[in-house]
Length: 117
Image 1: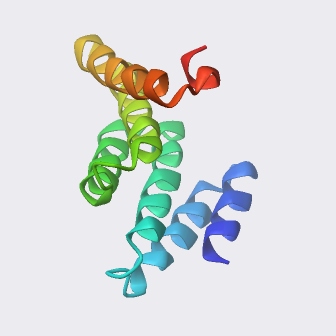
Image 2: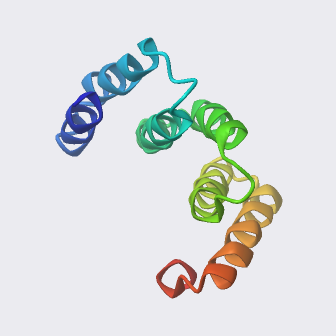
């Protein structure tokens, strides 16, 4: 339910409440459920982008990336795209392009044309 509250508060632009609910997820032992932590980190990143904390967005995305299994190409695709966006906002265009290219490779492999367009 914390994830759902976080999403609702994000849509309401109540970013402090959204961050609060997403971070509550980390109070649980997530060793056996890394996908929950990955989702929480990936949900935190757009909040930080929205409020201009681009380095924090990259930090949480890096934490998510460390938990993503190499064969989980869908999660890696999303993660790389989000990191690319954060670097774009930081005006680090070479890094942005690097991560967008990584995301593009995976989108093509997975035939996720909506991610390519």
